[in-house]
Length: 603
Image (cartoon, rainbow, N blue to C red; front, side, top):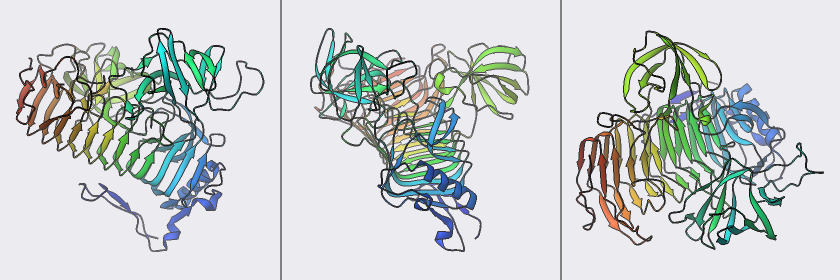
């Protein structure tokens, strides 16, 4: 058997941006492991977790290049799953039970052959850790009991709301509290150590049942990180939620979101060359696909879409990429009904919290869903950024690091730092920012925005369809809340269709270019060189097409605007273009609606 041969295509000339090809002198079977040989049986309803663990061990030991699943349904429970403590950016850290744990594996394709992977309880489907040349293809991921719950609104008044909870969303009303559960009753009396799983919920959002999207101008109802809601049973599956101020239209669907992001679908951490092809994610208790510190990721012909008539697919972003390098390719995908954005591509800022010496500081990961995210190492080149203005004022090279805990790290630099470094400044890695290609995707019916573009590598967004309640495309970056490094340097948005976006409350414009800049707006220019050309905007009212804030280099040309009656118009007309604190902006409003005033610019 010869060594595996890696063939890499730098451009997206075929359906995948790059392929992993294995050449061998023997038969195909000598490179292939069949999961049934390790005890898994499709469609038998039994737990296949241990069989998959054994098959993966065999692949690693024998150097197999394919793990195949004969078509059928395979089921996974947490009872016998491997576990490990993981820090997963923008999701919740914790001790994770994992069905498919790929740790330190090279040159492996997992082919589901159109199989269904069904998960039960709090078990993470896939975690890829320090692996390379991995392909996941031809299977679906779903959960028997999703981590959110859904109910039909019956009516509401000043004291609360009456709902009828849909079948398969298990619940109970216990001592005046609505609790969502796994459907398995506790054995014996309730105590502090009772068994049974509670599917905690902390927020609610109304959906239009007929349109299968968030209700027009609906707001999130947020509560503390509780497990349930004050309620009383009305008999059967009908419940009165005793929360004043709840609003909703009878017949619409109320979605109860989980109070966690503990169970993302596919996690790719510290890997090289990962392809997801023809993978469907029906549900996950967090993000669908999360890539962190990974070089080259392709998501092609995949779907994030709900099953069984559910309103929601994943309970957070469909995809999300943090501190990645190389290339990120999203092509020919369907991202719909996720509880947050279709994608977010960004880096991480740490905050300077103490100066130890001229060349030493302590930095802190500020957002709790970034704790444990290690990215500084000897030799790393970093930028020093003013916390309030987002202006990069210096660079430095890391000499050594000492992790104090999951939040704080002591950093020694190769040379003295600037005298004016301040507590509250931010530090981020200057890395091989990935080139991003996002093309031929459908993004619709989700909560919030479409894409968050916060990557400094060349970014191309073309031939996509957007129907989002918030901004279809958002440029961000801040060092005050999410601490996500952004600031595009070369971004092209062309030949896309923006179909009746902004019918909700999550954005100031269909394309919203801004950043968390609180000071020195006259000089801070965070996003640069954005070109928006040849797109079609279908709008139901006179809302803002483009909002630009602290941008240097922005072109709007050859875009067309069409009027629809898809939603009621807002009471007040808004300017189509809002430009504040920007340089080198060119807006050609030809093709816009004749009744749209293009003189709403400021700054």
